[in-house]
Image (tube, rainbow over all chains, first blue to last red; front, side, top):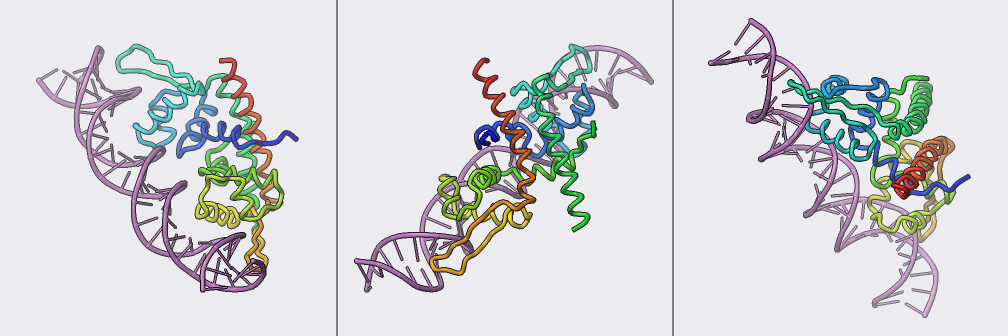
Length: 108
Length: 108
DNA sequence: TGGTATAGTTACTTCAACGATACTAATGGA
DNA sequence: TCCATTAGTATCGTTGAAGTAACTATACCA
């Protein structure tokens, strides 16, 4: 087994932690390409400011791709980059673990 | 593919996020059974207070097992529970991703 | 008598992330 | 003329996690 190092894990962890980032990623995984307003509807409790900030973060990390259409009213959409899609196995592993955890809790 | 839900991912994420938790888990993965002072040496920058708090958290979640020996000076050790070990695949997935990310950054 | 060691606890402070609200630009439609 | 729409920005306020420093008990050792 390769030794797991804190440093490498940190890198991945930083991209999906925070109160909202993983929810945004999941919305984009399940929804493909979404407009700002669609993301906002998918995550009703997030504020605009925070959603914008998180998306800018993810864009800077090259995890999501932001496309601006020069229209009025404005239209902007977001989708996972190919690189961003490489995070899916991690989220899948977490999802599977979470389901087994829920199972365990039910049969406590 | 099973749909990944925010809720299930959350459950796993909560256990390994925070500034220190995943580092503690990694130390226990690599070190098997460690005393409090050994953990402290492994994570030089964590304060006693925080280390204690995080370990209590992990104990409460049944991720780590805390054993107190009635000696003076006190001796307490910590190890992953079997349940805690089920988190290893997640940390491995993150580690692998982190390594590829580092690779990518090198050849930017 | 005082120092060392271990595994904490207590009280106080700091800071970054998060959040609520109001505001903007540009256009089409009533 | 005024309102609605969209994707934001600006400003200020709040909160919780983390950090710092000092303190504790108990026994051994010089």
